[in-house]
Length: 179
Ligand code: HEC
Image (cartoon, rainbow, N blue to C red; front, side, top):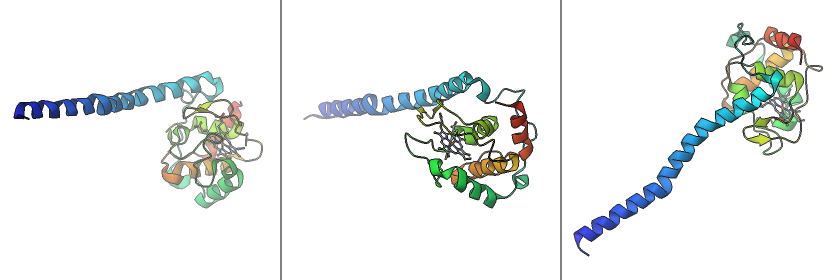
């Protein structure tokens, strides 16, 4: 084989690899980033009451990390009330209960949606591309504002999550707004 033929073959292999593997990976990667958020936002908009982040509702009194009560209490309340479904690892059960680890609602700076889910429950909403058959039960009647704030702050700091913390007053505001 002369040099020219060898070089052409090499070029062909490189081009095939690029168009066949690398290029589709880049395109699907970009599409995922572009469309995942848009789909999420649409679903949340459809749930009128869940309205994740209208400017008017955005809480102004974001609690500081050290005014959020007792982390051990949040952990204990989570284990007692939430881990049967979402698991102590926060990772849920694929197809049955969504993971709260790395979850959008749990890491979003505006905690309104998360507070409302815990107060009023949730059903039939797409979470991370999955529609869950089982509803999330409401906890507004069984847990008080401070308990709910502790659980939410636990979720927002556990399993590598890093969401801003909430205060009992913020939970009270959403409770007063009603479902
Ligand atoms: C009976 C099982 C069950 C229990 C107990 C439960 N959850 Fe859920 N949770 C679910 C299901 C199912 C969903 C998804 C519902 C849907 O999308 O329709 C969900 C959704 C959520 C979401 C929203 C996730 C998102 O991305 O929108 C949060 C936050 C949440 N749960 C927190 C909690 C907390 C906090 C507790 C305890 C106080 C708890 N859950 C207890 C089943 C449960």
